[in-house]
Image (tube, rainbow over all chains, first blue to last red):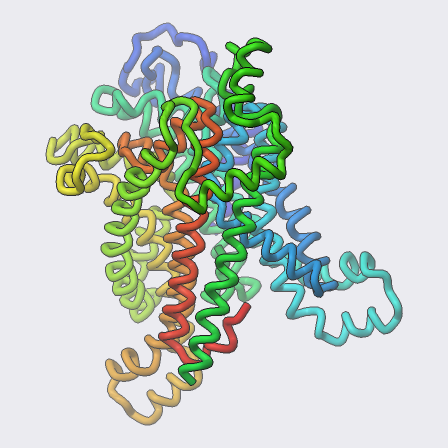
Length: 266
Length: 321
């Protein structure tokens, strides 16, 4: 349950950090640039003399907000469409699944960069782009899980009772794929966080001067030799968050018997 | 039997081609859906009605979408990917050499990480929950959890700033001969190898543990066969098949998403080409890159499917979907 602890601490900090940070994240903290960690600046200062501790504490907020909304959206639309396709089958299923194959072949980072570069890095745009993109992968998972269910008695019985398709999806299928969807969603959330931080790193995610781990690493890595702390602390922050999610996913997957290699889908 | 194999291979090939054709449509539609078009995107804030109209005419954007799609695809089929707006030269002059450089990275990382990670994965699986496994699993956890730009930055600091052994960023031209490019591939390849190995190791570990639990392996054990023979003859073949498929997916994903690693090392691959094209809002270039990378993705997965077929005859019919 180490993973859950990491995750809880991160979420708590993201929620409460604005109340506890010692400095203004975007203003000079009164000290010199590249000051090493000290009592006044626990994590030192960065290239502009800003407090790295403050910026690290705040640096996950936008990423967490956007990716949590994004993954919720992805699991919702991908999960629903996948269940429907698995249930109805036929040519619609066949055609859309080929489309899913085609979408999955498109390089994810370039897709996201393209949307962010042309449409903009508005939070809503990023959430919709991430939610759409990651939902495509969820379709396949939800469909595969549904296919194993549709031949089972309780679905056949519901069909024989003459239940509507949407009733079968929501009452019969959803409860049975929900835990799997949650695990897959959590796993994909970690990928989404990595992708989003890469966007920020490349200058297409969170706009400076808003504190963000990806942006902080991008801005400070060229002076790693002088002030490693300005790169290392945000790196440790994002690393520990993703490690937390991965550990948590491992525990969840084991709990519902998904920790087999055939269950792994990319 | 050979006939059946041939049919399956052919079928798989046709499916991939169909999906590839769909990819072309999807990319085209996606770019159509974006606000504005190639002309307004490229001109950005410098756009005036006159300049936009001029560029539109030059690009043929005044034609209906269907006609443009037909023109683009027939160009692609002849090897003509259009003209780069920012570089004012045919896209193809940059595309292939950059793809070559990126595939070099991908190939090197694959050649190193696949044998290494599979071997270590088997070791981890065999020593399950004891210290070699715990150590390897911990390393794998770090490798899949750290962003590639963090791994890359740490490697640059260690090997090029601290020990000054290796160049941090690429200093030769994109079209340089491979031999000249090779020193600059070391650190990006190392980053990719670390990323890949974590996933592959975990996959192999899970798969071998599954295989060792399976009935036919238990049976082989009960028959009193030597442990090494059980591992190599009975457990490993079955354990490899799912790993091949999943590994290919991960490798294909990595090839498509080299942007970040290449940007960290300023490596002249197709990823940095894409990044620059997006920064320049050079849509014809982006369109071509996405198509080519999607093609690589499908090709890698196709190869893995064929390899799986060859590895395990039982899967020939099962893995049709």
